Length: 96
Image (cartoon, rainbow, N blue to C red):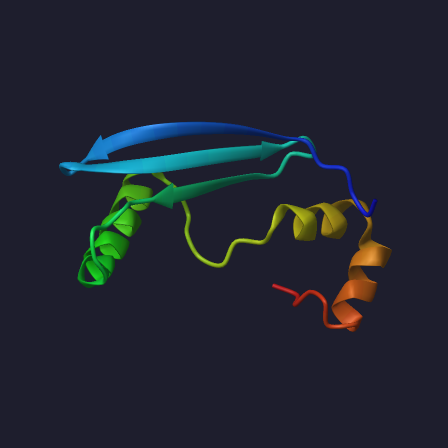
């Protein structure tokens, strides 16, 4: 195995602005944490507004968005820099 990562997930439903969001909080055993915010829509025409609402909820709760590294990426970057660099050099990972 390249890595053994144990993760604890907490899931919550938050009603905010009249909409029901699902928030998953993952905490890995090496100190990395990530939040995922979801909002279901009935049709594709609602996606743009849902995205705006997700960003607003995240900002209200102090959740920083953007291109978030995966748990494996962060684990290797922090715990096995030589292996991480090989994966960067081979194009498996892009340095963020």
